[in-house]
Length: 144
Image 1: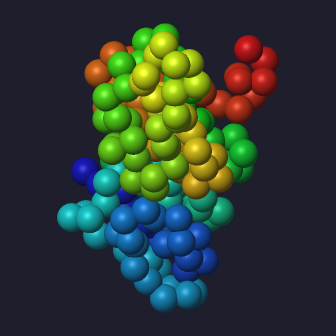
Image 2: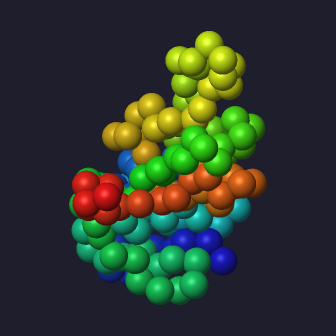
C-alpha cells in the first residue's frame, strides 16, 4: 500500500516539493493526493509534512522530522564490493562512486556526494547485496 494524504492536509506543498518521483499533486491551500501507481514509498513526504497529514504504507501517521535528523547512508568500504547497486537504487542521485586513491586498489567506492539531496529513504541500504550500508542518524555518527 503506498503512502496517502489525509484530510488534515492544508496544501502547504512541502510533500509535493520533496517527492523524487512527482507522485504528489495538488494546488496550494488544497488537499494533495499521492498517485499510488507512481509512489515509491520513500517516506520523504511524511518526514516533511508539518501538519501530520501523511499515512505510511502501513496506515500509520508519519511524523515530521528536521532534515538534519534524517538517517543517512553510512558505507563500510571494507565490506563493499563496488557493485553500484546502491547508486542505481537512489531516487535522488545523491550517491556517487569515488575515484581510487590507492593505486593498488582500482575500485571506486560509493559515497554520499550530496548530503543535502539525500531523502533518507534507505533504498541504497536495502539494495546492497553485502549489507555494507547502514542508515544512521547524524547524532549517532557524531557519537561514534
